[in-house]
Image (tube, rainbow, N blue to C red; front, side, top):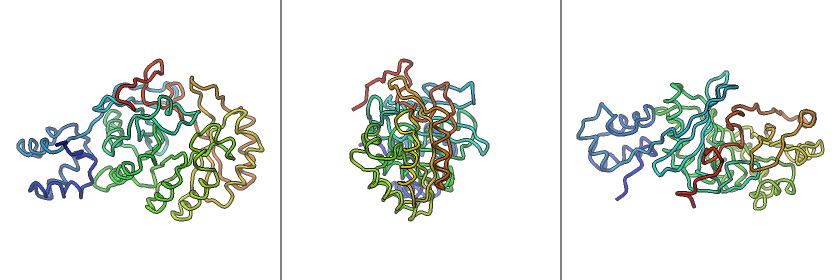
Length: 353
């Protein structure tokens, strides 16, 4: 019989499991603290539990962990990129960034990605598997332990499509915001999606108060389908209808992510069309000069095009920002994270579908 992934369980779920084996309720709180706050790698580290109890727990439960396979630090801005390896030898990248308000970590939610967006390195090599709630949490805990910090913000924008791993991601969100765990504010968490419509509606009904970031990257279906295969399933009007529902339901402003790609989606005409599309939606436009990856020939928009695009958005009454590029010297910027950080960019296919 396979062991239960105990770090993926809520406190209530641990209490229920412990009740089945005759353990008192307070033991669950002790174990939950070790798992969620201290980030232990084994039951042996739980020093306020007897050796006999630790052995008993080890028979029924497993503690999922990750190790730092590789660590790169930007010489430009201090951004840190990790390659984390899990028990099955699969790997993902995560990034820690320092801001005036504190530390933010960008985590992965899947090993690889099914979505195939052509400007994103995460999709190169395809999809392997979903991450469990515990594995997502391990990315946070391992980075905090290595840097001796406490992160204040989390963005689910690494490899993978969070809404394609919906149940595990929701469990992770509830764990990381538990007041007896990491106790992060849901308002300090951003979840990025390429636009899985049904899941956007479901997430809206959860009313979690996180920030939904939608990777739009185009003002119309024709351009969007050229760069994002998911656009062939979900038209832009369908995506924006779901976004409006989310904003109206949660009263939270949507962040529309827009990769500025030279000669493809960065004209004044594109900007005007985008504004017409977004009219009536509580939102913010986040322009991202596309980060180059060696497998693609996309180039970022020049400064003049970017300036004109911003001007059009502002004249139409939209809040618009241009995303700061962090970690560019270590390929840690938006769209550059991979499931493998091998020097030559070739992914090890072992353990992958």
